[in-house]
View 1: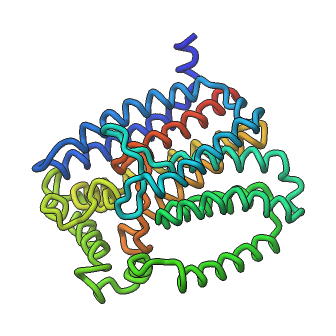
View 2: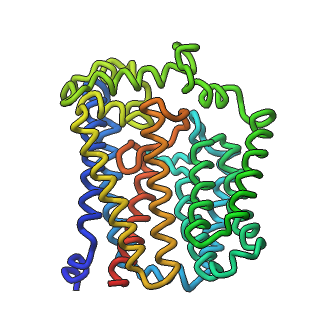
Length: 361
């Protein structure tokens, strides 16, 4: 029975994910070569737990989420509650807020990403033919706005953007009308203008504007981008070799095991290493979309599409900020960056996608 279950898994998807985690693990080991190895050992544990969780959720019938909306509502309010209390009782560093649990940090926003994929897939799977009614856009938007507002207060602008694009992406796939989409973009532009004037903190504005010309403040807001581009450029074709990247090893490159791990890979692995990362992400997205196309119900399709949107957006923004094309927002590189909560939730999402793949064949 267990062997039959293993044979039905999408192993191309699994191998792509595992290779990405191994590349990230090697980079984390390299950047801590002359320092403490705790990040490396913790990441090994996270990967092992994450792989186990993926198998567990692959074994569970995904239709339990589709057929029990009350369960999803409970999960939604739990995640909203965690996002609320982390504002008062959690620890904060930069744009991340978490609860400390031994050596493990729990970031409620990562749980929220999974819950919102489930909520939006379930909601639009029942109402996609009624999206001409504005009320469904408003109701689904209310679900999203509540958690986005709580995430923004942390303040975690990057994760708030992930949730907004998840909502927009799922609505577009579900069949939102063009005029409704344009109206949403107009409202979004107005809200961004209001946030820029009265909500965003100075350092957040600096992060957004510094990518235009980082040399205006090379020791301040532009420092991260400058060091990241130097690291990637110095890697050239084959890279400087594992453990031999001066930007990473001498700590000129900040957050080289989390936000800027892509720059560290570019420095030590070169263009060849970056190309391998791109190929693996292409396989990951391709297999998820293939499973979505093959699925025979709207919930399964929308969950797969929502998962692909979250992964794709995080990868696009993280690499964009590493190469200097996008503002720095603190979004991790999926399956590669160090971090327990993000990695574990990503594995759980892949587990649900695998459950869909197994039961829709």
